[in-house]
Length: 292
Image (cartoon, rainbow, N blue to C red; front, side, top):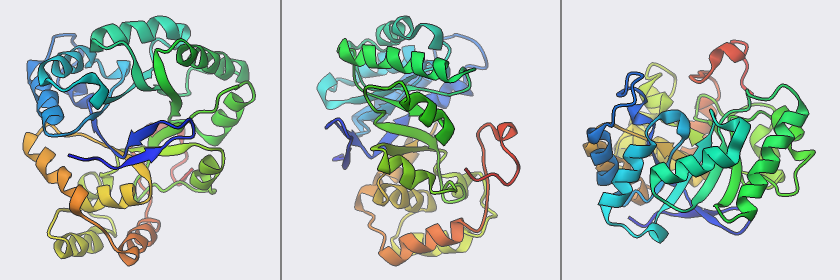
């Protein structure tokens, strides 16, 4: 599978489609028991060409991912591995080393601060980012970025930055396109945008106003609503992170590589989607109608 890539401001290139390895968040049920089924699923994804893996210490699946990478038989240089620090935010070098050991690799292609909620002051943002810069200088990560950061969080981080974040991975889909010119602002700052929960209009909110347009567009392209949503993101230069516990879905999602939406279809999804609002991640931190 020849994944299209997006150029980051540091010159590295990131595949526009990633397989999310957080699936076992729901399988572990709070235990640390190794999940062989998950390792087999991730190995299958790699062997099917999903060479961009989206990982995090928060998911509790790093050992499964490491085993899958080892057993898949794909050379490390052909993989793009994204990981994130959350619980280990107070000692990023130690957290990074632990994640590298669990994933059985010597470096990450992209390393992100998973959430901004740890920070009690601007100084906290800046200290964490300095550690990220140090890890890149040490050669343990090729690119560094953020996840779930709002504009004020980024502005606080940038005040002490010598290297700019290359990306901010956020909840982004047709029902949460972000208000107040947030996406254009990030791009003006040199940051690309990554998406999680991008299939929300198809799976988490099927009763929304995109039901009919997605169904019609999917039939036109002889594919599924999920593939249409992936294509909408990728054609808008959004890095799409998706996941599944069903190996058959891997073949379905791969159809995005042959699905080319028209400008009119892209615009319709954006316009109809913007008439509705639905947020899945940390809704308690936002007002009900807050689209930022």
